[in-house]
Amino acid sequence: MSNILVTGAGGQLGSEIKKLAYKFTDYNFIYTNSSELDITNHIAVDSFLIFNKITIVINCAAYTAVDKAEKTKY
Ligand SMILES: NC(=O)c1ccc[n+]([C@@H]2O[C@H](COP(=O)([O-])OP(=O)(O)OC[C@H]3O[C@@H](n4cnc5c(N)ncnc54)[C@H](OP(=O)(O)O)[C@@H]3O)[C@@H](O)[C@H]2O)c1
Image (cartoon, rainbow, N blue to C red; front, side, top):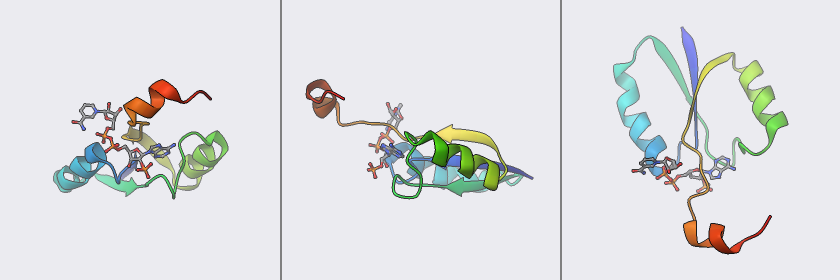
């Protein structure tokens, strides 16, 4: 059975994927929110993928604060 990682699972898109996942019984869904897995931390992401034998990633994580994104410089 393939393991699918759904990142940003606490968000709007992630929550919808959660609702639909039961239809896909050939897959094992693993959900993470930002406190469990920060997608900007590539070391943490690499480790998570390897440790959990993830073969598919559905990335629902995103910086969606549009106004802040316009103003904040990194
Ligand atoms: N909603 C829609 O109808 C829709 C339609 C088409 C496309 N999309 C796209 O889908 C993506 C998600 O949209 P959304 O509406 O679901 O947004 P959302 O409700 O704001 O959810 C985004 C999620 O990403 C998480 N996140 C932010 N930074 C992260 C990080 N560094 N590591 C891990 N998780 C992180 C947030 O967690 P925290 O809150 O804990 O930071 C939040 O749970 C966006 O790219 C959007 O453009 C959405």
